[in-house]
Image (tube, rainbow, N blue to C red):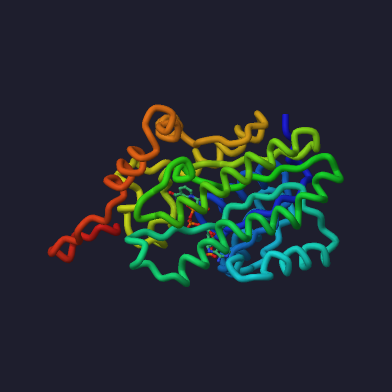
Length: 273
Ligand SMILES: NC(=O)c1ccc[n+]([C@@H]2O[C@H](COP(=O)([O-])OP(=O)(O)OC[C@H]3O[C@@H](n4cnc5c(N)ncnc54)[C@H](OP(=O)(O)O)[C@@H]3O)[C@@H](O)[C@H]2O)c1
């Protein structure tokens, strides 16, 4: 059994969605939590709620993790309070959807900085202490999109393929270190993710999972010291498609699934609900 009581967990992207629920579940299991994302007010409200409800210490530490140096500054703020992080949930992330050449290059640079660079930097900053303690957990939120190239989400699926590969490699390196490292791979999930992308076309017609089920899978994956876990049985089968279908075919199937739908002439019907 993994013991969460009295540990300090740092959750990125904790202002909403999967990260918010992850923070709540950690607090319910007795962990103190550091909540980070850009939305200062939401973090403060959640920190107050969690400390009142679960009797744990909760800190709101806003940061824009797509900016160079932001992760280091956050680590310095945490160290200045004399705190050491035992559990790191690298969850903050966003996606982009559309034809590659039509998506803003700046937006995709931010996407790479947040989904990839900040995950690597946060791991550099917090893994060594966990290794010294011979105890720790890092959960990197990847995606079902990590398993296959997704047309119209070329950069997003590549960032998540990075997170999956990075996490599995570190999991193998840390077999004897006492630190558990997991890539948590949700399929399409009911959060603000699709509002941020601006279209449901990115879901490829998949039924949306609940964020609760995703967080549950994360805890299960850590409990069993898995290197990765796909949330949801159907998503698991979808993730294994590459075993039976060529990479070329998989890329073409994905192209059909996530192709932007023509916007209806009727203004009450949009592709982004
Ligand atoms: N929902 C899905 O279908 C789905 C599927 C597979 C994987 N995922 C992954 O799951 C993770 C969580 O997404 P979600 O579904 O919970 O989406 P969400 O509801 O949009 O939450 C994203 C979180 O990331 C934070 N964030 C965004 N930009 C940030 C930045 N520059 N610096 C710091 N924090 C930032 C947001 O807070 P602020 O806006 O306050 O900064 C928010 O807390 C992401 O890594 C996503 O790629 C989601």
